[in-house]
Length: 90
Length: 131
Image 1 (spheres, helix red, strand yellow):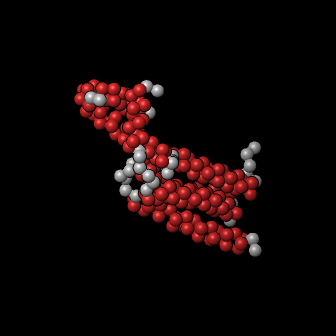
Image 2 (cartoon, chains in turn red, orange):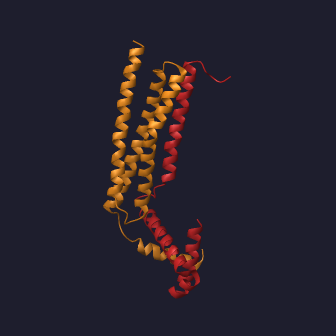
Image 3 (cartoon, one colour):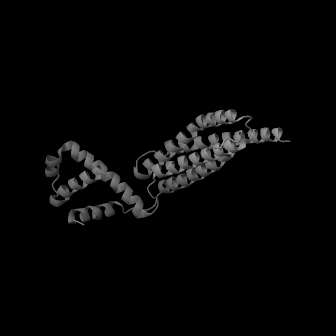
């Protein structure tokens, strides 16, 4: 989350003085651009959360649920196979 | 919280002063659809793997066929991952196009239908083995 931290530092300078030029000088055009992009994403996330219309989609968590379920099924099938042919460990 | 951050949040709340849109409803519905498809996929996945075991002639045959099935279904896992990642993007980036996401989601259903066909075939085989 260092991107967000940097963006908030940028916002501190920008909103403290309401001086875009000072923020630009301090962070450079690349840093300012990255900070604004991050802030824009944060705005999107807050908009969604505030409206309560869509919770931000946690893709990683959903994919983890899928892969976890698949791994469980695989393990169960292998155990069933071992049992069928009496190949249990030990 | 420091004053500048408070001001930032005030600005964000002002920016956020807009209501629900058809886009948001479409995204929310899409997430529910993909979750339903994922749950169906996991139930089917277990049934197909068990059916493979039930029709296996030897332990080696079962291992080989389970490995083949695993390899074959990786594309389904990838398709789900792509759909979820695309949904995460359109949920946060207001200008990201929705039709691309719908196209990804539409690919999931035929893949799951393919698994249903596979299960029917395996169940038929299992009946033939144990009349």
